[in-house]
Length: 83
Image 1 (tube, rainbow, N blue to C red):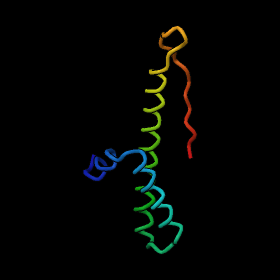
Image 2: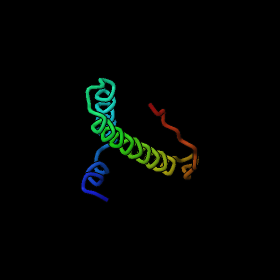
Image 3: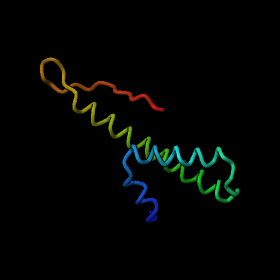
């Protein structure tokens, strides 16, 4: 794993989404060269995967924390609204 990949993994979900939005805006402007656009696209795909993994981890954690009326742990599917 490269230093850049490790740095991306350390981003909070919110920071990853913010950077992803910045990348989308840059690509939509169409001002980047083809090579820059490809690099931005690759970064965006990596950020998208990071966000997906972070959401999955949060969903799993919430499922583990839910309890039923009797106070016993109860697995229940939890789904977040994905933007």
